[in-house]
Length: 222
Ligand code: NI
Ligand code: MN
Image 1: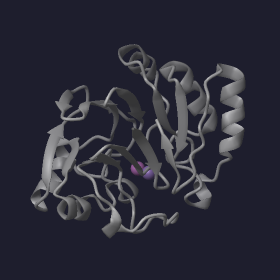
Image 2: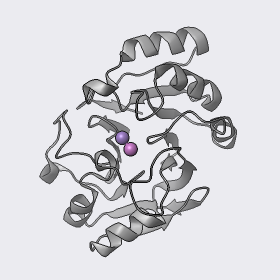
Image 3: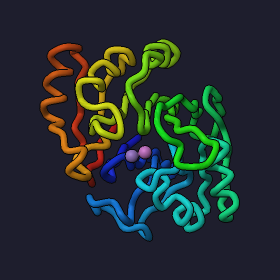
């Protein structure tokens, strides 16, 4: 069985049997406060960029779990210097791990680390294709990503202000053509307050793509 747990903001945990992957592990300072750092067990940590709400507790968690951080070369370099196991990749690159593959996608956003670039991930996790967009604006090459990969679940930011907002995220879904959309990166702070229900209704009316609103702390089966 494969499950996806939402830890609030842009932090997700994918688990299949005894293999677990964390995306953007913002735990300690996450206002949703649904997890304790010491309780989290994982094998891999995917970091989209260096902003505090994404790099988060990656370094401490990687050390605590002997987990491998998978990210761009710049973030991997930074974490490696802190003593973490890392696997450096970069935009456009794909690599196979024991769970499946990771493809690093572009994301239009600040890197949060010198000389770097923000990214997203498309991962094949035991046969499920998951697109984690990271922090990004809407961009036209999402159509290309939708052509390259048969996306089962698209995790898209809808908060606006720092990333695309709900109406742009409807356009994103239209290009990506996923089986299901899961919104993220909203309601963490007042500046990114959004109604996920309004987003769900719009997308389901216009595109006939189901939106699964996963609440912080909630786990769904994929
Ligand atoms: Ni950011
Ligand atoms: Mn962010």
